[in-house]
Amino acid sequence: KKGRLTLECEDGKWTTVTEGKGDPAKDRLVEVFRDGKLLVDDGFADIRKRSNCEKAPVTKVSTDCGLPGDVFNNIVMLTDSYKVTHHLQYPPGTTKVYSYFECRGGAYEEVCFFGLQYFLQRYMVGNTVTQAKIDEAESYFKIHFSHPVWGYDEQLFKRDAWMHILNKHGGKLPVEVKAVPEGTVAPYKNVLFTMENTDDECFWLTNYLETLLVQLWYPTTVCTQSREQKKIIMKFLQETGCGDVIDNGLHLFKLHDFGFRGVSSTESAAIGGAAHLVNFLGTDNMAALMFVKDHYHETITGFSIPASEHSTMTSWGREHEVDAMRNMLEKYPKGIVACVSDSYDIYQACEKYWGTELKAMIEARDGVLVVRPDSGELPGIVLDVLEKLEGKFGSSMTSTGHKLLPPCIRVIQGDGIDIKSLEMILVAMTEAGWAADNLAFGSGGALLQKLHRDTQKCAFKCSYVCVNGVGVDVVKDPTPIQAKKSKKGRLTLECKDGKWETVTEGNGEASLDKLVSVFKNGELCSDVHFKDIRERSNVGF
Picture: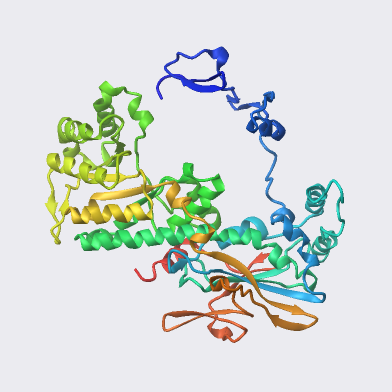
């Protein structure tokens, strides 16, 4: 849209008025923030009213105070509501609950495990249970579980059990977690970590913590899918005569993380972005860099370059687009620089501006210009841009007979990229005679958010309990859905001659078990470094 905007509603019809032609008196846009101060403080009741098309007032304030502290630091409340009541449901005499996490199947057979150390450090290490947290949780539960007819059942929240953890263990969680080392690549349908209580009175705690730790589905799935895209990129580089790109490590810059803005939260950006960095070195996701530094001891894990966006290009106006492009080359006289080139006409940008008026600057420049189309149908737009640039800059042939643009110019496709379109584009390029090294990819929401827990069918299930001193192997075995059948008994993860196997029912050999203790009674038992995770993830390349 063009110019200053107002959002107006007359007779139930909403209109965005452009080019500064709106009526400020009718504008439904309300100033909510200015110069570091919050100017509106909405109550949830008013939001609900508006969602029901009812009128609700705007509560105006003027405050520069943000939210106090970390509102998600109460371990007593970081669970599904129904789990609060589960302590009443185990067999009398239960003293041990042992559960495990796995990918029961999914889109990709090879799973790259990542993210556990963060969740343990962030939520479970140390004196996580306090009197204040128990009191706060109880106050929520008394309202949350109340009923207008039957009221609140005092036995639902096991306050005395949490007080036991506080008084006996100093607020440290009496559980042990054993896991495969992060970065390990193993076939799906294998155990990745186990958890059990270490205090007989806290048998209920194991699965109380399921909600939190099953969120490992996210970094593990992002890491796994990113690794699959790495496989695809390497395959086409090799098939089109660009093996030297891999030899020089430059393939690690072929899939760039554009996903910070495309995810649900800053925490998601950090976790997912770090998972991608296990496999690649290119990112614009600053949250991921901070995450890896704070939790995995790596100061420099990803790299970026100067690049334009539409606001910096269109602010020059249509008639001065070439000047905006020239400015990019002048302001960044050496190195790699990327410029979005479809603000008005991508073909004119390639042929008239980059390929004619600015061609000599590009060829004389000490570096690489990366042209970015950001609209158009895939894979056609990529092929079109390559052909337009070749028409002006020429090309050479790789050892496999595929065309390669001169070293001074390349292309990046960042619009509409997911694992399927990435492969589709590389197939189309290969069939059209183009080498894979001509192109890099940027991926945003698809890289970090176009996936879910069932992408790899992640699950956490109880497989063993101890009741009245007797160990019992337990199993979920729904008929006829055999895909959801769980594993039984105590588990080991063993690898013999490169073949991974989860041994069930306590029949494994402890000396061969790849699961190692990473957390016990509130303390980390291992400290993983990102470089080691990357090294493990490279198995098979």
